[in-house]
Image (cartoon, rainbow, N blue to C red; front, side, top):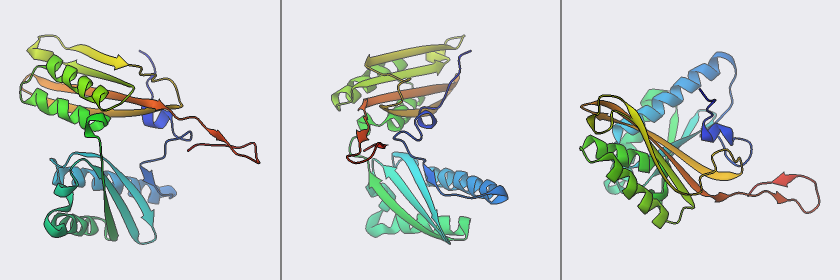
Length: 221
């Protein structure tokens, strides 16, 4: 079995940053890490139809800043900000700290790996053919302007007795290139035949470092 590294962790330190930006030591690190898991789980559970791609968490003294990246900001914000105020109150009760919630819109949901994976998983749960869902997602992603897309579905596809893996791709998807601007998404479809996993890779091009004018240090954009 080959060694597998998460595409985000593989590129940390080159051009990718952590989804949680804070520092702690010892037992405090453990407690804050579990708190991050609880925050993300509650946000996704409160708004399952909001098209949330990922959640960034930053910590300051006695304050937590949560940035929600969503394709449907209107659902997250609510009428006159009612939904986001309610969410802020629930997160404040969970953490016991002041919570600041910011919402950022994803302009191209058809080119976001996590949203594509969740969309395909939703179609599988509605008994739509996996091959049809995968082909349509690839076409929409390429139409949105990405340079490459790869989709894999694993499980009892179409109710087969034995689990199998099917994949489809278009364009270039250099998963082992660190400078490649790669997005990765994963979701699971709960069908009557069992769980079907969906993995999506989106390639947006290369991010090349720029050489500083007066130093020998390379900096990324």
